[in-house]
Image (cartoon, rainbow, N blue to C red; front, side, top):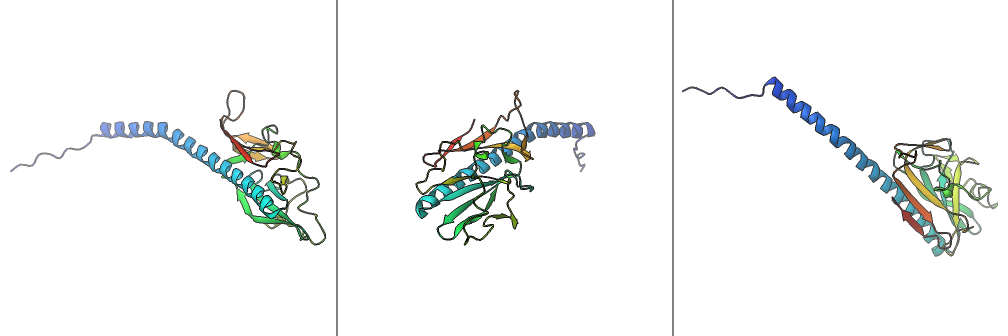
Length: 216
């Protein structure tokens, strides 16, 4: 009885297989990464839309004022990424409702485009959630146990009818893939005009307070 020699891959064959695997990975990885970024952008946009709905519903059901607050120049890694809801109680003043919701890493409010992110303008001045009525616990809104800086926020107030205070002022939040620092957003990807090709807009209709979503 004689055994036939065991077949095996030669070195050139192994190198060819490795090269093919490398090519496949190079083709697949960008697509998978892009899907991940798109998913993170959708998660962030849905979070913002849900917070708008929460603030509006609490204002209507409680017959009071609520506010959607965005952290801006607080000096933290959550600047332009953290949002919270505050509520006004007669006789007690403002208090935070729930926890801060932070957008996924790599997703930011577009601070470089104030037309698309008009929510960043026309905030209540002075910040009513820090210095309120005498019985109000000050400051009622904190981030990581620290007071919000004078210029470290953007906010819009919902009235008991569900609409916005100062409804004539646009209130849109645009989320993009990028990082914001000192009021400027560095986009992860840009088109031929230097603008982000992918974004998630959440516009708050002034008269009704409803969230309107727009995506390319």
